[in-house]
Structure formats: structure tokens, C-alpha cells
Amino acid sequence: MSARKRFNAWLLGVLDGWFHRMVGERKAALLGGLRGTVVELGPGAGANLRYYGPGVRLIAVEPSAAMHDRLRAEAARRGVSIEVVRAFGEAVDLPDGRADAVVGTLVLCSVRDPAAVLATVRRLLRPGGRFVFLEHVAAPSGTPIRWLQAALHGPWRAVFDGCHPDRETWTVIERAGFVDLHLERYDAPTLAWPIRPQIAGYATAPTRDNP
Ligand SMILES: C[S@@+](CC[C@H](N)C(=O)[O-])C[C@H]1O[C@@H](n2cnc3c(N)ncnc32)[C@H](O)[C@@H]1O
Image (cartoon, rainbow, N blue to C red; front, top):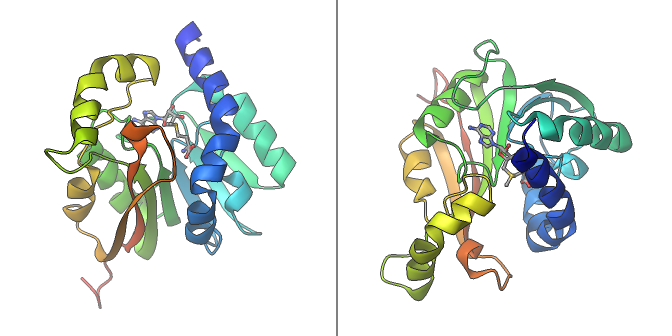
């Protein structure tokens, strides 16, 4: 396990309370109503476990082994049933239609291939299942924050484990073939300008009646 991966696991723990204050209310509203089998992609050290309702069976797809002990400990602390799978969201060895819901928060900024991850989300969801997302994204072109995001891109990626501060993640979600996409843009209440522009929402996997 590399020192960098251990550093990132430690950093997520340090920043946990800050993220909770910044986006906790939104996460609680999006995640609290989910039921059944939930696949979470990139759960890190388990920041979202506090928001899940009772009875959720969580399958946590987390490529960094440095997160796994913290993730299991957080699940035990919160009484959440958990199965940890070590995989990247681009290639997850779980059966089609396994999930009632798939969750990804603050993760599409870091993955290598967002379109491939969205294809996994579609594959794992049962028809009518829900994809829930919350992401920091690129600011509108020509704005000072977009300029800052571009200027910081290299060092930001190096410090924050491959995170791209200026991804237009909404375009990939819009093209992923969901129905009933609810996507809200907002400015997060933080002075950390590069991650201030955010999107959050949910979308439904197509069914025969709603293709
Ligand atoms: C910034 S953390 C977000 C943690 C948590 N989801 C949250 O909302 O605080 C990003 C997480 O995504 C994971 N990750 C990075 N690349 C990934 C990939 N290709 N597939 C799935 N997870 C990935 C990282 O290991 C890390 O745990």
C-alpha cells in the first residue's frame, strides 16, 4: 500500500467534518430515502454511511485498500451492513441489475474514465433503479473560478489523488441514457473556490414502460 494512498485516507478523515458541514444536508436529502441494495462507488472512508436509512445493504466499491479498514469500522459504528469490493468504477465485477440504487459523491472528479463509470452505473442498476450523485464541477467558462481551476489543475491533481477541479461532469451524466434526470447546480458554501461550483441530483434507469 503506497504512502500516497495512506495519506489520502488520512486526509479524507481530517476533512470529514468539513465536508459534512458543507454538503451534509444535501447528501442526507438524497441518500436518506434509499432502500434495498445500494452500490456506492468510491465511498472513501465511509463519509456517506451516516446518511443511509435503516435496512440498506451497502456494496462499497472502493479501489484504494487504504480506505477499507476505516470503511468497515465506520459501517460497524453506524450499524450499516457492508460488503467491500476492491475495484475501479470503470470495471466492477458484480452482476447486471444488482442494485436498487447506485451512489457516487465527489468521485467522478477523480475517476480515469467518467463515461465508463456511468456505463457501470447503468449496468448495475435494476430497471427503474436510481443513480444519486453529488460532484464538484467546472465553473462556467470565462469566469475567475474557471481560470483558477485551470491554473491549479496540475498541483491539485497531485495533492488530491488525481482529482480534476475543472471537469464538466454534467455532460457525461446527461449523455448516460438515464430517464427523469434531476440535476441542480449550486455554489457550495465554502471559501475553497475550486470546489465551490457543484451539481447534485438523481436519475432513473430506463424501464420497458419508460425507455
Ligand atoms: C474525494 S474521495 C470521496 C469520498 C466520498 N465518496 C465522499 O463523498 O466524501 C474520492 C474517492 O473515490 C475513489 N476513487 C478514485 N478513483 C476511482 C474509480 N475509478 N472508481 C471508484 N472509486 C474511485 C478514491 O479512492 C476515493 O475514495
